[in-house]
Image (cartoon, rainbow, N blue to C red; front, side, top):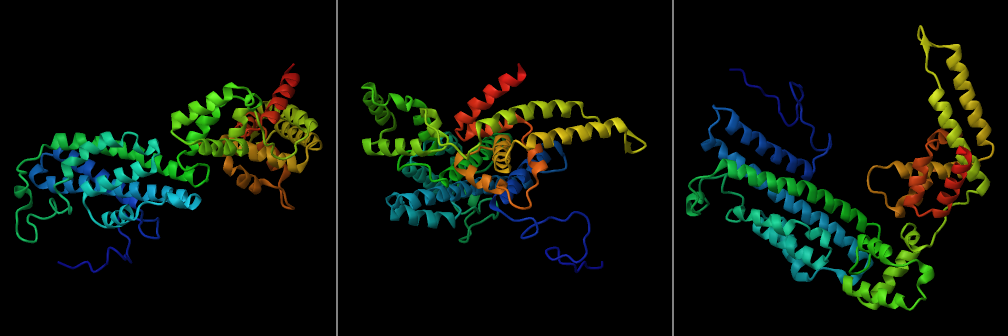
Length: 414
């Protein structure tokens, strides 16, 4: 038999499927977790559907894949929460973990005990005190206890420990219910699939710096929605509202005052209490022109033809395209490039499908601010859908712009 001397980890000859790893596609803990998770599902199906597959043999890689998926899930959760904690410590130096807990985290992350990882995660969650991190985990962690006996991750890789003790037999394990194992593993993985995504989002939220010692950004938004409009804060019942909020969130009067100050200065939260920090300076006349522009250009777009004959546009189609850009140019005369750029930024902010934070609008706006290379017609095309612009404005608390545009639209449609 001729030996294949090609190194599969540094291939020179590419045969069949090639896996992209390292710098060629990236290798991340999440990717490895998905791999072991999906391998477990494939092996489960192999035992159930393929009569040639022996459960007595496949149970070892099955359980190892299950166990390693869970171990990675816990480590990824802890590492992402540590990023969250880093943002808390940057703002409030006294919020750092106790030295004992910090040492325990470092030791646990380099070992394989699911019991220790579970315990550390619970301790971290308790210290941080954000209820969203606890959500559902305490329930699902009960299922992890099945794997506590295997503190080194060796039980399904080797028959015996270093001292030659039979690992499974010494733990009283003589049979494994494949269906039960699969059902519980699926429940654990489905939880972690959502939980890890949530933790990443929460950690990203903390990176904005919008929080206090005991209140998350989410808490601050909820408080903003519970506060009365700011013009009523001098009324006697406002003191009762403050006390109710202190009791509900278990915070001091000083921390509530800090929270209210953040809300007042926040681009979006302030709109919930009747305040506004207006962005840019789009004039009333420009807002009226823009409302007409959106309505008229949408009509033209609906009627714009793309008829072709023998691969060429028809005369009728070309005339419609000409009229479209002629009308667009007429409207653009009344809109400054600065205002068009700001409206385009609002439009982009309005269509993002992931969670938009008002704190990041100014950074987005910087990408749209005009320079000598700005494509004005391109920006005008971006702002044609006025509902996207209004959604972006809403996310930034721009109540005045919204009110004036809505009024202008009602006049145009009449």
